[in-house]
Length: 323
Image (spheres, rainbow, N blue to C red):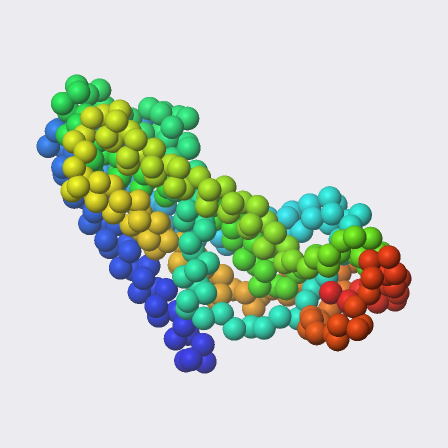
């Protein structure tokens, strides 16, 4: 039992360290901003000073992430499973595959990467589309803009991504549950009679690839726009090696800070999976899924290769087990 919990040490240490660093950095940035703009209220919906806004958001968002996971993960996983069943039923079967149970600390850390990139990308998109609505941008002269942008922009990105993280957790946590439950789709055997490759994929993986593609593609574009194009070409911050390295540091460092807030949710998923996994597996079986196991792909002699013009018809009796 003790060995089971040892795998949580690194993710939790990463999370605690990241949260402390994030808190310290946000306080430092707030202090620098208040030197230039002594009266500045960051969040339009919260009355109070900049420091109050920061502390309030950090205080409310962390419990909100945990509560959101506990309330929404199972219902969202059900709706994701139902959508796949409805829209892919013509070509794919849904089954429950026997999978391993190992999930070490490194896999937990890796699992946090794509949701963090998604939250950063979505946060930047929301800030750009709703500029001045969620976060107030103070009126600035050209000189003030050059002075305040290097500290204001990281603060906006950080809290924009933490707010967007509520959406990221709502979308990605159900995919973790579906993956960990072994729910898969695979092409029906009758479709393999045509020129189509076998296709087996976890339902959660299919959704996470679909959603995560936006984050992976949009993240470098959003960071370049915020920390290079706007900073140096719109607001006129001096283009020096030092300033470029600072921008690069924010681009590479912000994902790690956001990951620190996701890792406790991943640990919570690991702690609750023994209760939630059977629920999802029973739900999938209620939709017609069967228990299946993976068949290893084996090499065949060159003489046994079939010509495309002479395919063997697949037996319908093997439809539910050949994956």
